[in-house]
Length: 113
Length: 112
Image (tube, rainbow over all chains, first blue to last red; front, side, top):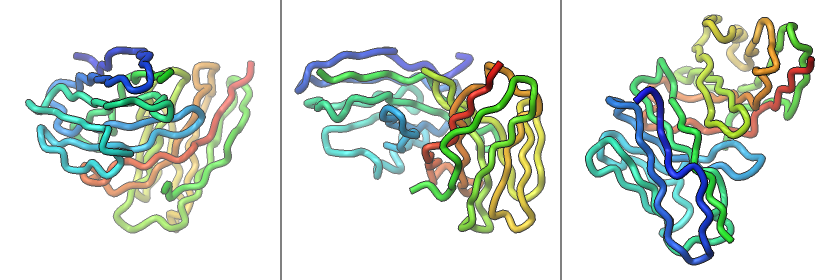
């Protein structure tokens, strides 16, 4: 596609519910990144994939957060037993080459009630 | 933690040049300066990057001081659509293994 697509655009979850957020990167982009952005803050790194390999997951805040990219294209960020502090915008970005920077999706706004 | 310091907010009159400063006094020799912006309810958008030479593209110009400890992003003729949060980031060129680290950025308000 022309850009990075994320779905759903908005998600409301009850505390304790599991959620899955999807990212469709630009076709052919090897690198894929997930970021979490709290209100009024800059995006914070969660995890990074190169093709299907998860090379860095140092930013995942707890073991309730899990990301996968099994075929090296679409990625899913899963949050188990959601808590109110998980409420944020979750951004996905893909990159072919750093000369062109990252291309971000519009994000998924997660609200845990 | 972000390795850059930016003013939290700035105003600019429509049609005038917007000059956004960034301090990165601890930048390493292999680190580039990247600029992104984030318009409300959208993901960040890549603007420009540079190592030590000044750079210009269709969106902006990037001026990096000779000692590389600071830089300025210039939007030559700001429009209302340039209202956004602007992030200055330093990162190695091969940033695949070193994710971009965002700070809080500068909120630019372009005023009619």
